Amino acid sequence: MSQINYYTKEGLQKLKNELSEMENVQRPSISAQIGEAIDKGDLSENAEYDAAKEAQGILETKIARLKEVVANGRVIDDTNIDNTKVFILSTATIKNLKTNQEMVLTIVAENEADLKAKKISIESPFGKGLLGKSVGDLADIITPNGLLQFEIIKITR
Image (cartoon, rainbow, N blue to C red; front, side, top):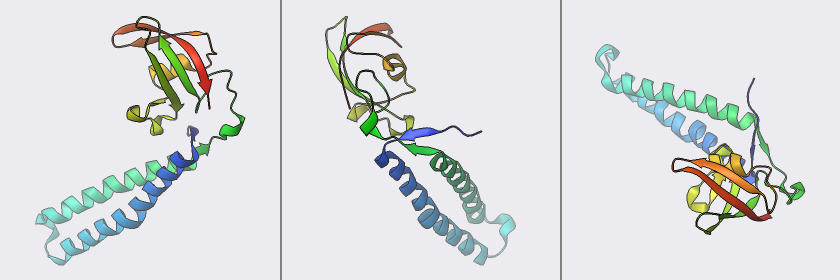
Protein backbone atom coordinates (compact mmCIF):
# COMPACT_ATOMS: atom_id res chain seq x y z
CA MET A 1 0.00 0.00 0.00
CA SER A 2 1.31 3.44 -0.92
CA GLN A 3 1.88 6.11 1.65
CA ILE A 4 -0.23 9.27 1.53
CA ASN A 5 1.91 12.42 1.69
CA TYR A 6 0.65 15.92 2.38
CA TYR A 7 1.83 18.97 0.47
CA THR A 8 1.10 22.63 0.10
CA LYS A 9 -0.76 23.49 -3.09
CA GLU A 10 2.48 24.90 -4.51
CA GLY A 11 4.51 21.84 -3.47
CA LEU A 12 2.17 19.38 -5.18
CA GLN A 13 2.03 21.58 -8.29
CA LYS A 14 5.84 21.60 -8.42
CA LEU A 15 5.83 17.79 -8.44
CA LYS A 16 3.20 17.74 -11.20
CA ASN A 17 5.28 20.18 -13.26
CA GLU A 18 8.36 18.00 -12.78
CA LEU A 19 6.40 14.94 -13.94
CA SER A 20 5.11 16.83 -16.97
CA GLU A 21 8.68 17.90 -17.86
CA MET A 22 9.86 14.29 -17.68
CA GLU A 23 6.98 12.95 -19.78
CA ASN A 24 6.73 15.72 -22.36
CA VAL A 25 10.33 16.93 -22.76
CA GLN A 26 12.83 14.38 -21.47
CA ARG A 27 11.05 11.24 -22.72
CA PRO A 28 10.76 12.49 -26.37
CA SER A 29 14.38 13.67 -26.24
CA ILE A 30 15.63 10.24 -25.19
CA SER A 31 13.41 8.57 -27.82
CA ALA A 32 15.00 10.82 -30.45
CA GLN A 33 18.48 9.84 -29.22
CA ILE A 34 17.57 6.15 -29.50
CA GLY A 35 16.24 6.75 -33.03
CA GLU A 36 19.46 8.48 -34.07
CA ALA A 37 21.55 5.66 -32.62
CA ILE A 38 19.47 3.07 -34.48
CA ASP A 39 19.99 4.97 -37.73
CA LYS A 40 23.77 4.59 -37.28
CA GLY A 41 23.55 0.85 -37.84
CA ASP A 42 24.94 -2.12 -35.90
CA LEU A 43 23.41 -1.92 -32.41
CA SER A 44 25.62 -4.63 -30.92
CA GLU A 45 28.60 -2.23 -30.77
CA ASN A 46 26.76 1.06 -30.52
CA ALA A 47 27.64 2.82 -27.25
CA GLU A 48 25.28 5.71 -28.00
CA TYR A 49 22.35 3.30 -28.29
CA ASP A 50 23.29 1.54 -25.04
CA ALA A 51 23.62 4.86 -23.20
CA ALA A 52 20.30 6.15 -24.53
CA LYS A 53 18.49 2.92 -23.60
CA GLU A 54 19.97 3.06 -20.09
CA ALA A 55 18.92 6.72 -19.74
CA GLN A 56 15.44 5.74 -20.94
CA GLY A 57 15.20 3.02 -18.29
CA ILE A 58 16.29 5.39 -15.54
CA LEU A 59 13.83 8.07 -16.70
CA GLU A 60 10.93 5.61 -16.88
CA THR A 61 11.68 4.47 -13.31
CA LYS A 62 11.71 8.10 -12.13
CA ILE A 63 8.43 8.78 -13.96
CA ALA A 64 6.76 5.74 -12.39
CA ARG A 65 7.89 6.75 -8.88
CA LEU A 66 6.85 10.36 -9.32
CA LYS A 67 3.45 9.31 -10.72
CA GLU A 68 2.91 7.28 -7.55
CA VAL A 69 3.95 10.21 -5.33
CA VAL A 70 1.60 12.59 -7.19
CA ALA A 71 -1.25 10.08 -7.13
CA ASN A 72 -0.86 9.71 -3.36
CA GLY A 73 -0.25 13.40 -2.69
CA ARG A 74 -2.88 15.40 -0.87
CA VAL A 75 -3.09 19.17 -0.54
CA ILE A 76 -3.28 20.41 3.02
CA ASP A 77 -6.05 22.90 3.75
CA ASP A 78 -4.14 25.29 5.97
CA THR A 79 -7.23 27.34 6.80
CA ASN A 80 -8.28 24.76 9.40
CA ILE A 81 -4.90 24.25 11.07
CA ASP A 82 -5.01 24.58 14.84
CA ASN A 83 -2.46 27.20 15.93
CA THR A 84 -2.35 25.97 19.52
CA LYS A 85 -0.04 23.08 18.59
CA VAL A 86 2.73 22.53 16.05
CA PHE A 87 1.49 20.61 13.02
CA ILE A 88 2.52 20.38 9.39
CA LEU A 89 2.53 23.90 7.84
CA SER A 90 2.85 25.49 11.28
CA THR A 91 5.49 28.15 11.68
CA ALA A 92 7.07 27.89 15.10
CA THR A 93 9.31 30.36 16.84
CA ILE A 94 11.57 28.35 19.12
CA LYS A 95 14.33 29.29 21.56
CA ASN A 96 17.42 27.21 22.21
CA LEU A 97 17.56 27.05 26.01
CA LYS A 98 21.33 26.65 26.02
CA THR A 99 22.17 29.65 23.81
CA ASN A 100 18.93 31.68 24.11
CA GLN A 101 18.98 31.97 20.31
CA GLU A 102 15.56 32.10 18.63
CA MET A 103 14.71 30.48 15.30
CA VAL A 104 11.60 30.53 13.16
CA LEU A 105 10.91 27.24 11.35
CA THR A 106 8.03 26.06 9.18
CA ILE A 107 7.15 22.35 9.28
CA VAL A 108 6.56 20.98 5.76
CA ALA A 109 6.36 17.67 3.90
CA GLU A 110 9.68 15.97 3.28
CA ASN A 111 9.78 16.88 -0.44
CA GLU A 112 9.23 20.56 0.34
CA ALA A 113 11.99 20.92 2.94
CA ASP A 114 14.38 23.80 2.23
CA LEU A 115 16.75 24.76 5.02
CA LYS A 116 17.64 28.10 3.40
CA ALA A 117 13.95 29.04 3.45
CA LYS A 118 13.70 27.71 7.03
CA LYS A 119 11.30 24.98 5.95
CA ILE A 120 12.06 21.74 7.76
CA SER A 121 10.74 18.28 7.06
CA ILE A 122 8.15 16.79 9.36
CA GLU A 123 10.36 13.67 9.20
CA SER A 124 13.48 15.48 10.46
CA PRO A 125 14.58 15.37 14.10
CA PHE A 126 13.38 18.98 14.52
CA GLY A 127 10.06 18.24 12.82
CA LYS A 128 9.43 15.16 14.95
CA GLY A 129 10.55 16.94 18.11
CA LEU A 130 8.29 19.95 17.59
CA LEU A 131 5.21 18.09 16.36
CA GLY A 132 2.26 18.36 18.74
CA LYS A 133 3.95 20.84 21.08
CA SER A 134 2.18 23.97 22.36
CA VAL A 135 3.48 27.42 23.29
CA GLY A 136 5.53 27.11 26.47
CA ASP A 137 6.28 23.41 25.93
CA LEU A 138 9.84 22.15 25.82
CA ALA A 139 11.03 20.04 22.90
CA ASP A 140 13.97 17.68 23.30
CA ILE A 141 15.63 17.29 19.91
CA ILE A 142 18.41 14.81 19.25
CA THR A 143 21.02 16.26 16.90
CA PRO A 144 24.48 15.07 15.81
CA ASN A 145 25.83 17.36 18.56
CA GLY A 146 23.70 15.69 21.20
CA LEU A 147 20.40 16.50 22.86
CA LEU A 148 19.20 20.09 22.53
CA GLN A 149 16.25 21.58 24.34
CA PHE A 150 14.00 24.20 22.77
CA GLU A 151 11.09 26.17 24.15
CA ILE A 152 8.12 26.87 21.88
CA ILE A 153 7.70 30.67 21.90
CA LYS A 154 5.05 31.22 19.23
CA ILE A 155 3.03 29.20 16.71
CA THR A 156 1.51 30.71 13.57
CA ARG A 157 0.15 29.43 10.30
